[in-house]
Image (cartoon, rainbow, N blue to C red):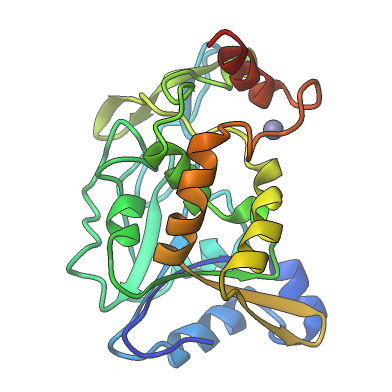
Length: 255
Ligand SMILES: [Zn+2]
């Protein structure tokens, strides 16, 4: 799965991994990946915590060392593994290991957590950057949030989670930070799959029931960016089916 001179961002579903028999525990799976990772490559996983400030008291204060990630047991096991470093972003941190030192600045905190200057931005600009979806569908394909940023969509500066009491701020042990571009709903990122499979070489391999999809980052951006720019609704849920996506439809309707 992991080749020389590549930089990987991996999203995974342990339920699917276990069902396929590839690994029995998250630890077994992560150990397998770390053993397989060539010295010239690096491996990154999300460690998102979504630690936004809320209008109600009692919200989480992000602590880079102790706040567990909320994106599955594999990512959390990876975060706690030897030689894995975590970035400081209080809502959308990443973890990485391997030949990552040139681009993975763990102290990076940007107002747009998946936009300009973010870890994802640096990752996307690297040669040989690949995303692996291991048992997940395309709703886990975080790179598509970055493409929304590149497309400069008109709703980027609006907070789609306001109805849940989520504020455009985050509090960590390093202080309070403003969030100018809050990633929205990703349920309909699944709509990108058909386009990507049709137009670029999407590498899919199977281990029994487990589907492992590898996508080249630059190819994905080149294909999808013009499409998202010309149709900002492309990756949104249909109108009337999803509150955060509806806030974005509303903004587009006023243009
Ligand atoms: Zn939605």
